[in-house]
Amino acid sequence: MGARMKNWAVIAPKVPPAAHPGLEKIVRAYQGQIRLSRPRRSKWGDFRWVAGEPTRISINRDLAPEAFLITLLHELAHAQVQAWDARDHLPHGPEWQRRYRDLLRPFLDHDVFSLPVARALRRSLGQPKASCGADPDLLKALQADRPAAGPTLESLPLGTSFKTRDGRVFRKGTKRRTRFECVEVSTGRTFAVHPLMEVTPLPTA
Image 1 (cartoon, rainbow, N blue to C red):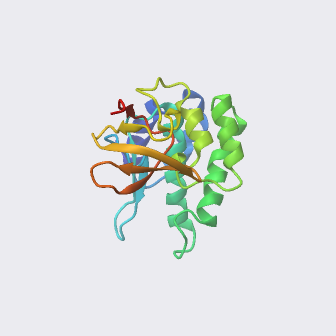
Image 2: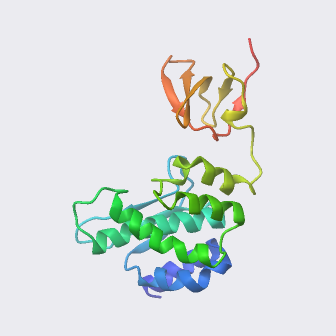
C-alpha cells in the first residue's frame, strides 16, 4: 500500500463520515506521512519538516471526530504553506491563515460539523487561532458532547485549591484575558491555566 493510501486508511475512521467526499482528495494529495499519536496534553497535533525528508503530520488518536478533522486541516494548512509559499513565513501568519480558511470552508458549507462547532468556526475564520485551545468558544463547542471527567477550573470559586491530573496542587487566582493566574502551592510560582482544564477541587483547610 502506497503512502497516500496509508494516510487515508489512517484518517478515514477518525473523521466524521460526512467529511469523506471532500477530505479524501485532500489527504491523498498530501505527499508526506500522517500518523496517530498517543494523547498529548500540550497539543492535539503537529507538523514537522526536515530538509530532504518527507514531511510528517501527527494527530492525537483520542480526539473526537470533529476535533480530529479540525486538527488535521490545521496541520495540512502548515504542509501547504511549506510546499507552496515563501520560506520566511510565520507559523500562524497570513499564509497559514489563508490556507486554513480555504481548507475549512468547504466543510462548513456542506454541514459536516454540528451547529455549535460550525458557529464557533465561522466566528474564528477572520483570524484563526493557533490552536483550538486558544479559542474558548470553539473548545466549549467541541467539549459539549463529551462527558466531563470532573469540574473545570472556571467553575471553581476564586481562591479554591485544586489538583491537576499530574498531581500538582494550585490555588485559583484572578482571570487575565483568557486564562486564570494560579499559584502552585509547593513552589509559589504563578501559572496561566486554561479555564476549561478539568481539575479536582480540594477541601479548604
